[in-house]
Length: 53
Image (cartoon, rainbow, N blue to C red; front, side, top):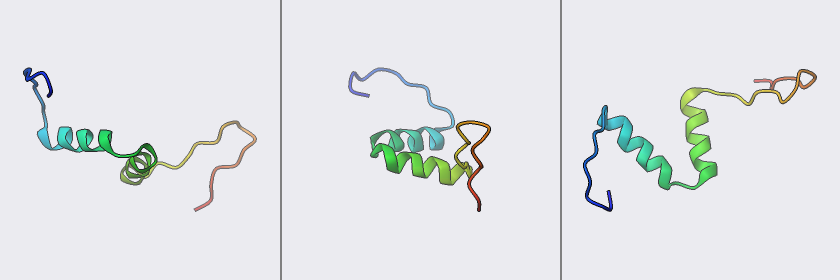
């Protein structure tokens, strides 16, 4: 914290991980999140097929 203020973080392991993700480049951050959550891109409309595995 730059201003030296008080911050409550719980759970601290999760908070440090999220702070680390904020300083990473956006494409790498999105890749980490999608890998960790096993999220595949949703189709933009009903006619589009979901990605095959």
